[in-house]
Length: 145
Image (cartoon, rainbow, N blue to C red):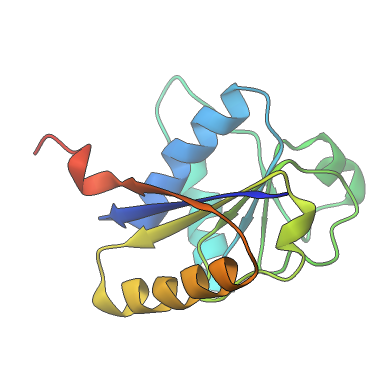
């Protein structure tokens, strides 16, 4: 069964996703990020500047199939028609991604915005109604600011 985790309290979802992708790709995982089209475009740009010494190899879903096959991170607005195997799905979207159950692990990133938290509660409810156990990670407890 798919492992589910909610990462709550991200002050900036895209910045957090960049760090999460750097860590996941660095560990050898193949990752899909689902977000709306604007967030995909911003994340694509942000990943080029994660840090001066790090590069997170990635592509968007409009890249050539050969590029997608070699990229450990794929940015898309829909995960339901992926042709290549990925282990991890990172959800930055407002709804539960179709086909989420095909992944070994799903990570839901939730910001501090009240509307985003409300949408996340709906996704949490959906997953629990389907019988999934969810790991909770409160990012506010990890910050040292």
